[in-house]
Length: 142
Image (cartoon, rainbow, N blue to C red; front, side, top):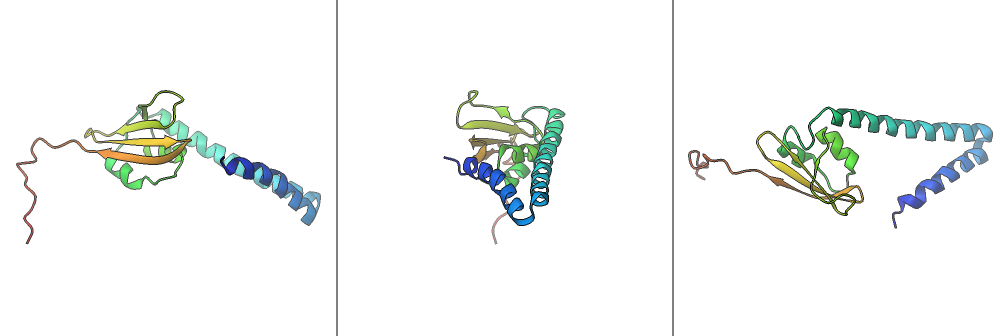
């Protein structure tokens, strides 16, 4: 069971109760005002990220290598969408767990991300081999 499903309703009831115990009705108004402001801030971020993602092609990212460097385990899907500024190309079946998405850049490198319950659990960077790799050998070690 997700602990967040229990703690958020308890906080939503407990914090106004604490505000009333500490400052009376003014405390309740202050706590409820802060909770509404917190909700509006999150909603505004959600709308801004979705506006940006609507303008970009699905599954495209500027640099797959930079995306790979900035990803962390446990971040939510909204964080990844804010990084890529595009919806990912869905590779898994709809409403199936885990959800698998791919973002590809102009050099055909791509990052494939796996989400479980909206949280990033793993990702893989794929970089295609260059056709002229033998023309530029790696430098010799001293």
